[in-house]
Image 1 (cartoon, rainbow, N blue to C red):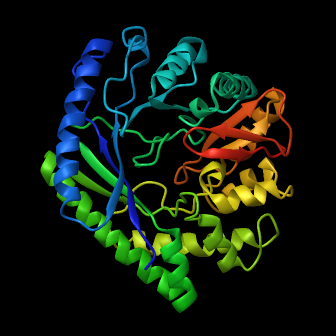
Image 2 (spheres, one colour; image 1 turned 120 degrees about the vertical axis):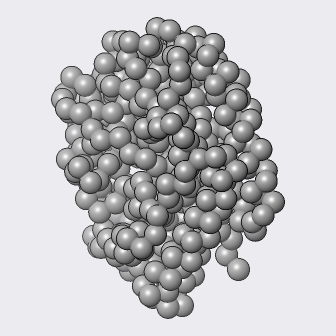
Image 3 (cartoon, rainbow, N blue to C red; image 1 turned 45 degrees about the vertical axis):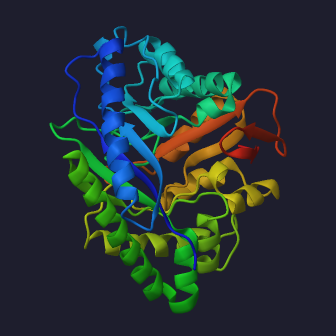
Length: 366
């Protein structure tokens, strides 16, 4: 029996009464305590492992950045926290982004109007974070679509700041989907997605009741975690190896199934195949084989959320900015795309970058 887990239960928090460091620290501590109590009770009622508990703040007002600049992370490490999104006004927010990520928070920037000026600044920020510590770059994302998205997936998670907390969830289940596909094809895949979506939704609803929140739905995205590989599923369905032509069609078949199931349940978020290089062992293997380029993954955004997620590349300000443009080209009002890049000076194709959480990540050419 292939193991399936609830990847996360995420609490999208109400808007705080004030935006200053001391208040937000207490606010997060209070909500973490409530969420952990609910997490313990719900975990004892299900056979599904709940891997992470997450709290997402509403976007911080730009004029409050200086008030919250000394924010410390006092909540225990097994609760992940996102500070939501900020505009790409990096002259005002870059130091805050750097210090908050160094403190252990996740955060993203939302780009409404792509430009070389903005993307070059973001390329340099990715480099600054990566040079400080590669793990820091994994906590920062760029939303290239201009539209915020209610999703449990970090670092693009966002909260609308409604009066009651909103609850979302997602799964880790690529291997279970692969087994179902091998037995019964796309019909089996569809049945398996629907089965686990209903189970995870039931857990999410129970959690929402415990915390007096509103369950908004499950993000059905097929997201990997190391040996539980999204690419393993896609290569079997496509009948080719990445980056050979034809891989995008396999992705599109899975996305079609996810779209069909999402129309019949409470679904939110991306609901798409995800290929974060640093989180998928098979994708790491393909990167180590020397044929995969960052632009290959960027162009797969036409079919999925492959984007530039957890990709390690040499630093080149113009080329990294160009890759952001390459990804943004596939964004639509109904298709939020993001980028998460580790980019360092002095590294070359074939090198490996070590991260504490994700292990070694192969460096691929741009």
